[in-house]
Amino acid sequence: MWYFRNPLIVFGDDALEHLREIQGSRALIITDENLVKLGFVEKVAKELKYAGIEYRVFDQVEPDPSIETVKKGAAVALEYQPDWLIGLGGGSAMDAAKMIWMLYGTPDTEPYAITPFQVFEARSKAKMICIPTTSGTGSEVTWFMVVTDTAEQRKIATGTPEAMADIAILDSRLIKDLPKNVTSDTGMDVLSHTFEGLCSTWRGDFSDGPALMAIKLVFQYLKRSYDNGSDMEAREHMLNASALASMSWANAMPALLSHNMGHALGGFFHVTHGKCVGLYTPFNLEYVAEVGAGILGQAARFIGLEGKSDLELTHQLIKKTRELAHSIGQPLSVKELNIDRKAYEKFLPQMVERALGEASTPAALRIPDEKDMEKLFLYAYDGKSIDF
Amino acid sequence: MSIFATQAWLDDSAGLLNNSPEYAEGAKDYEGSYLYIVEADEVLSTPIYYFVDLYHGKCKTAKIVSSPTEVKAEFEMSAAYSTWKKILQGELDGNKALMTRKLKVKGNMAKLMKSTKPAEAYFKALSTLKTEFDK
View 1 (tube, chains in turn red, purple):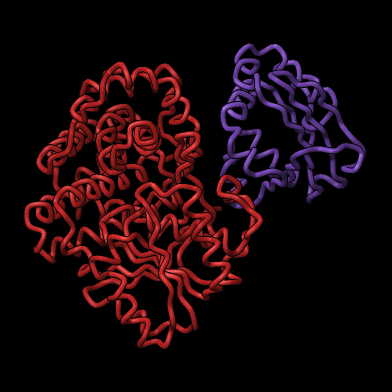
View 2 (tube, rainbow over the protein chains, first blue to last red):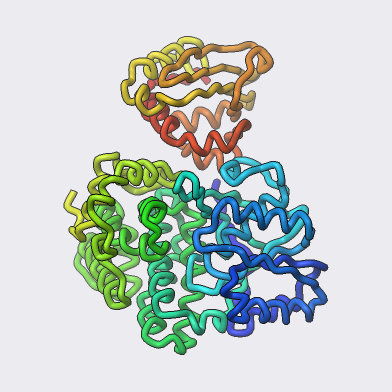
């Protein structure tokens, strides 16, 4: 027995207007200061006014939101008592919104205690809408949340099925002006997500479908949207790809381990999430190439690659992944991030422990031991293809 | 080989843990006690309870108890007999069992989620445990 979970997804270039249809009285919009200045909150507020819903804004979410920030947001929610929470922004805003929602519904819990193994009361108080402004983390369609314990320099990746948003609104007008570097980083996050879902022992028919479609869309439209941000066809398809990719891994476990490694790197060196996970992805794919050739070969064929065997196709797909990353200005090794090798090696034991310690590790197609995980980190530092 | 959820099986489990240098290292800072409940189902007529106390890389206690109130445990793990059997025979992933709530856990969730290293060491040490099922 397993599940395939996702919210109601409203998509298209007028998707924001769906807010006019929601029933309720008060909404708390959770976002960052930048999006207030850029007028995004005003766009959402305009639609809420149509629905007769009053609103308040919590705009203190920072990149890689901290436990302290989500607790502040929860305090605002407890005081304001909204019946809708709206996470508006990138992954940071949406993850923070979902965590705030959980803390609002169950005030005596804490972020570390939010697990899929218990019932939380969030929906008894409010429902959740997620509106992404990047393409993206796909947080709008998952029940996972990542917040940062600043005291321990650690990212906490957690989740509970109750944290799945009720509605995800994919309005491509909101990502039209995404800067080039953000388009690139978030695009790599999407590509990494597709492989996370495909390279999981928990994958199946329901999770494979969205992943395959997402891979196709990324290879068709990411470079286009990077080269020309006004290409609205490309923007819309990338926004859809973002949701599809996350629908896949969120229902299959993110088991390629690129996110495990990326979280560990990001926790110590503060590199943007998409850059971290995208960087490790080709190395992780090489590590599972033999055991994962069946599904990866399928993915390669689906995007039009030709080859004599699944393994040959898998290696072509990995090569194409590196080519795409390079074409949109992504690093192909950790050293290109100007991270000092000595500093990297100093944190290596902790990075290995954290990468292996995430809940998704047991679902990996090929589970590295500590020695292999260390080698994965070091090979990725040098940009050396995996040969073990 | 010993029969699941008997004192002999628990003695074998404790033996594996206490003779594992990897467990001793991986769980050297860990303290935790568990009440396991094997719920009655279509093949088991009355529930079985057992208690495991882990302390700094050793299994201090592993014993059958006659009722859940006999011990005070930090965590409670419960599942039907058939679910435990599937998990131990590798037919059902333990994490999946937890996420579908076929295996239920109660206790300090924050501590549980921070204890992945000792938990992995625990399951690795017990991976060679040979279990027989008499039902």
